[in-house]
Length: 449
View (cartoon, one colour):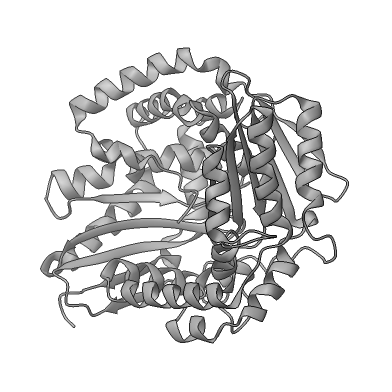
């Protein structure tokens, strides 16, 4: 899932290569220190869209992103999968252009259109050269998509069928089955745990899509992020143009009650695969939780730091139970999960799972060592500038800040807040958010079926 407090790329490096990487990160810290002090300007459009803007004049590129509270958590009862299908259809015909014409118009000016949908939000992004004629052509297409997506019957039928086929394929794979079972077990009474089914997708109608779009893709439900070669006045005009293309009639959706961590469950599901897929976890942290930084640093030590993490050292390096083992927090709008995951041979699934739980229990009891804390801080602060080394990465960070309501100086103080974490902070934060009695265990492909 999106927004993990981890650095998964670190698991690709052996210790010598990680030493080189940490040295390179230290050099980059000096090179990019100015970029970490990014100035974000914030305002609201006349139609109620929230805007975050960063002027980045080094390259002649403009990046624009709109985020809507229109993720799968807003799927209506009995219509699971509707949010994802609606998002999938947005750029497949709009205004007086069909899907091929949209693609061709953007290609003609070298523009790129992309999007993303998850449990919390749905987004549309545009990248274009900042030359006025390029901008004008690309924005004409982009605003047309925002204003009047076609949702034509033939395209809807095709994409619904493709979604059903993709889901049926996913349901044959142990990793997908384990992930679905895990989220459903963690969130039995919250939309984060809703399960899409082929039958449910097949029952969705084109009118369902149109109603969802009208209810969620509103100006007042939009966060606009702008990064690039443009000044504040031009950014203001652009934001007003984008917001004006969105529907204004309607009320932004209301969030459900936050999830709670119930008593832990143990699920063992059969599968013929030779590998068992194991997940341990519980609902843990919202995006704006004040414990974010202690959990970030602590998790790097526990299971987010690749070969230097405790889980990897004990389970893979010392015993060879798994090729990959990890942990992460996924901060979300409401209580995203803490997850420990690994894959192992069926016959050693029980012992590997038991060992992972023991390592977690020991970490909760004693916390990290001073040397582990120092190494985690050095890596996290040294590698942080890599999150800001392109306009696209800055846009991603700015969009998170805007959508989740994080402080505008979040990036400027990120490294400082990592450095401020103490051993006691980590122990206290983990005690508040990770309780063993609430830990759910899911194994797909257990030895005894």
